[in-house]
Length: 215
Image 1 (spheres, rainbow, N blue to C red):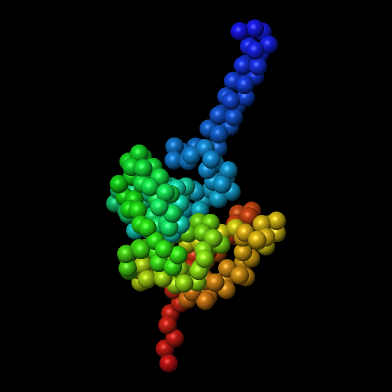
Image 2: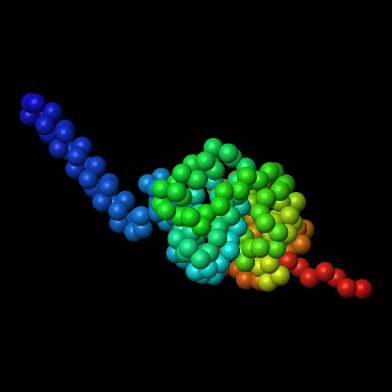
């Protein structure tokens, strides 16, 4: 190898090492895949899971789990005494998630194939249903959210993490405004229990089913 080629190799290796080190600083857990680091910086799992009250032993449903960015974080938090039903409509993503969960030794993750309007989650079984970056992607958000309520225990809640268009107008066409989200929640039969708005670009909403009106 000549001196010029050697110099290029040294520069490349140094850049690779620096990038890997930076990723290592950002990724303090072994659950995060490299391409998930940036989004986890925006929506820090530790902060989000603390905010929505994920605890060991809970039974949780995750709608729109995808390839498991949050699934593995929740599964780790609830532990072997808990159960996580991971829903999605994309079969390839669910297969990836199945392998990912097995590779990490998470026996508490149950894969659930849903549809555009049906979650496939067990009825009256969930302490909490979680949706991260999902509502704005739904074809029929009101119907799906209404059906998600069927899976909740009497005191169960729904936790929604969504980008807030009011905070970042450049996301027009992708994210929803807070007012639009609140309208969807209301139409689906929920009331707001608590809202966490301290993240720079996202809001966290905790919802409960609205009590039926008694004449």
